Amino acid sequence: MATLPDMTKHRGFPSGMPGTGIQFVIRRANPKGVTPIKALPRRARPGSQEHQVDAAFLHVLWHHFGPEPFERGNLDAARLSLLFGREVVPAEKDFDPASYEALLMINEKTARQSFPESFEDVMEV
View: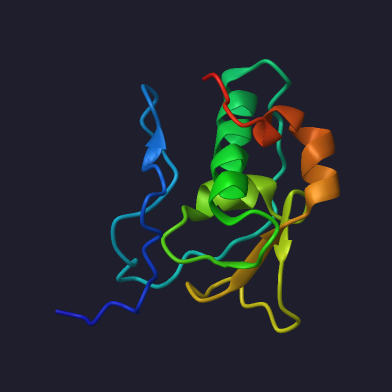
């Protein structure tokens, strides 16, 4: 059996969006290699379920990490990619999009403009 790369598991981070099957974290490292994070176009309109999922994920990121850099770890690449390059940005000069150890941070100004509801203390979903 192949040895899986080390991957920080963010304790206390919700596994996903309740009632949707959409995941926020992965359980184990990908044995075929780390899925790279890349900016994906976001087509979700405000008020849509997709927008609500993005807002909920950002809400959890903000309330878990705040403005500080955080390690990618077991955060889902697809969820991060929908925010990447806008609300979530690299936190290091030599950012490796295919590393579980890559450091990210929330671009607070952009995130507050895109998803103001994510910064409320409690977010209804």
